[in-house]
Amino acid sequence: MFEARVKNFTQLLPNYMHVRFADTMLVSPSSAPRDDVFERKDNYYVYLKPFDVSDETVAKRMKFAGKPPVWMPMPPH
Image 1 (cartoon, rainbow, N blue to C red):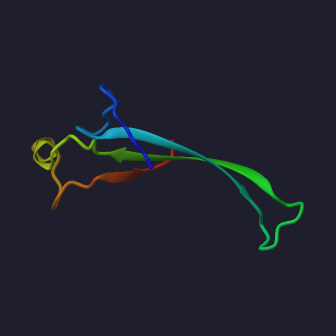
Image 2 (cartoon, rainbow, N blue to C red; image 1 turned 45 degrees about the vertical axis):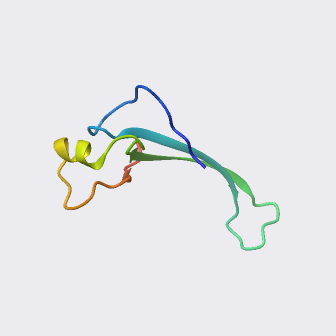
């Protein structure tokens, strides 16, 4: 579950939050891990539309073919 209720946020795209999810997991190159497990840390970046911003508000400044998406992926940085 993710809950974001912030007053101010970075807007690289109008009306969308710039969000980073940090993930840490244990992985193994083999299907039956033994001593080859290692820790992997990744960051995932998305543009996220706040729950209280209407589609009409987004459409005034952004042009989408249809309904504005709730989130959009962005490249790692």
